[in-house]
Length: 121
Image (cartoon, rainbow, N blue to C red; front, side, top):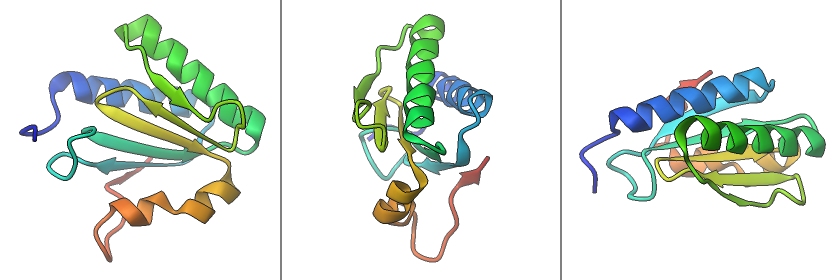
């Protein structure tokens, strides 16, 4: 397991959060995974108001990360627009429609019992 998030990981997370804010993503939550999982340093969960907005938020984020960081993200679920998973390597981003997010409740799965999300933006 890694010793913790790297500077590059932090910069990537900051850019992801800025992109989500620019595109009006709602209820953005950051969960610190360092020391808990080898898959990534952070998980970001957010919502879009419609399938169209979920797809747009995801497309723009992937394009920005490719242009600015040279990161080729793996994307799952974009065609349906209910839940898009974007794997950037150091940060995993989930963009949901609110109803789908409520159904799966990923925040509860990854946060310690009785604790709030690491960061709500």
